[in-house]
Image (cartoon, rainbow, N blue to C red; front, side, top):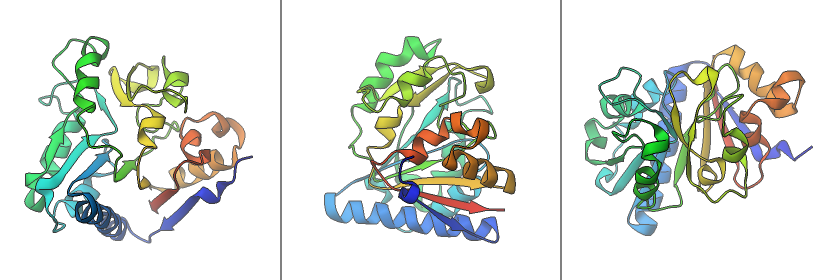
Length: 237
């Protein structure tokens, strides 16, 4: 079994405190990057969990004009769709202090992620890699990014030797077709955070980390057991 000491957990008694702490930590990483290299790169997750975190991060004082922001994955829907992660990022994160950040979306107006893949890959090649911070989430099915159980390209997405940065993903539990960064691309970061909320997810994550029962096959386990970059878990009830 891989050394799970690569994972540290930061637990909070309430989710407001978590949002503040995580926003401060990510902002610190971005400031350090700007000071050292003149620019910073951040990848965030969609879904409902990061909404409060986005609001807190948007008010952090730093030179956001030197920050590129992208998503770890995206539903293949336009921003006019209520399920668009890009729309949520623009509404909640790219406001206040963060309004001058450059957003680099994964979605294109192609009819499918497969049809838009070449455009997305060209767009992602413009990012000033490595990431300075990647913030992942986790679903109740053990997915993270668009690494869904049963995903049609899941083995390819989790392959640490894969040189592709982005892939389409289709899965029964995903709803819409998706576009996602691959695991090796997301691990090309100076800081990796996993933001989860609720007791059920805390237990699910613990089972995945230990490889217990069906959680041994949850895609998020690939993030937990890899040894390329430490994982900082932020959890609240």
